[in-house]
Length: 88
Image (cartoon, rainbow, N blue to C red; front, side):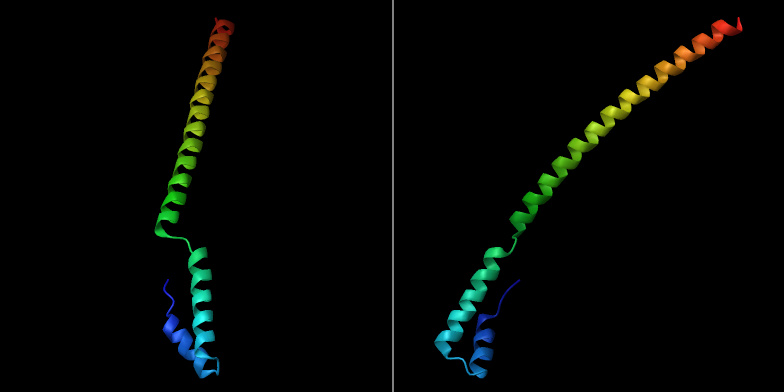
C-alpha cells in the first residue's frame, strides 16, 4: 500500500491548512501507517510458522492414529482367538 503524500498535502491545503502543517501531517500519517503495516517478509515468516505448527500437529495425529490402529488390531485378534477357543 502506498500513500500519496503529495495528494494528501494538496487536499489539506485546499481545505485551508498551512503547507508546512499539511506536510507534517502527511509525513506523520505515512509513518504511522507504514510502521504498522505487515511486509511480505513478515507474512512469509508467519506463514512458515503456521506451516511448521500444522506439520507438527499432523504428525502427532498421525502417530496417535497409528497407535490406535495397532490397538484395535490387537484387540480384534485377541477377540477372534477367544471366539475360536469357545467355538471349538
